[in-house]
Length: 385
Image (cartoon, rainbow, N blue to C red; front, top):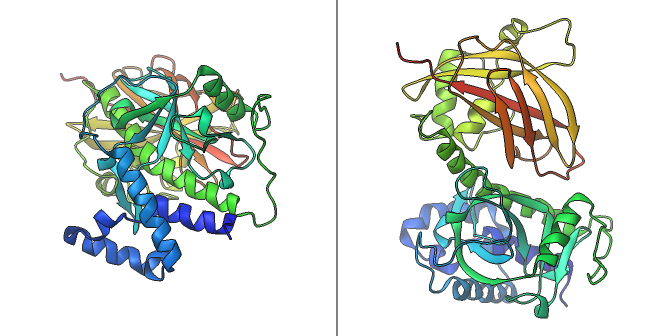
């Protein structure tokens, strides 16, 4: 009997277990053994579950068939269903993240080829409140549902071939549900409410991790494009940035392990004795931002500056100001993240930054009813004398 519990098991395998082509690759053996040590499905897989997983893998291979690496055959437009490129699949902490299918919602055009997408899932038994269920006649790829709570930014170059399109009414429905989870159009199927210990709750945790794993890579690449030709970082990993910051300011810590260089800079928490130097008794609600001097791509100094948040509007649009910026500061680059309690840091979908005044406005896509804090770093490179 097919149940949501079994559907969750298959979803975990579909999202985070290596397909046969990876599992049987000798060069992937060490990673696969690490995976076996933590995965109950691959190490003790029942026959019927194994056969179901093989079938899903073959279905995925068929959808990827004909895709050429880094080749974009057709321009990416809103309404298209696309998988992320097959070569972007990756190991992370013993799990193998397979590229999800997404619906393109809009070309945000904040940086070169950035897009806003909604993640999709093929098993409608896992749909919950806020999900938009689509039946076979409504999509070019069969039954599925769209996760209005799992919307993020990608690069157009990260997407594979176009699998087909849906009309604007479906895009509008997803956007409406993102803002109001019960704002279903008349034609939509209403998912059942959550129950106690509902497998769909754990499924959503899985889906957020999948989206984050791929979005954080794309956003990091978009940030590099935004830097050019102004600021370039010489470090190749988040760990290298952490090591550099530690040498400059011993005692700096991170509440969570950063996955990108940008996260390592913005989420760095300086020692209390450093933060006290930036305190301001007249602004009790102020927090701090990291001012980071870059020379030849390397961090040369990092110091806190007072930051005040003026207000919040919409889903999560935050405005504020950074104070005590050096008067001769120019050629700056703002990095920001929404640090959510119990979740991964969220990258902004767009932001405005005025270095002459320190004013900013940052927009995030977020529906989580969780405590959050804004993490900001201002990077600058002194003008050559």
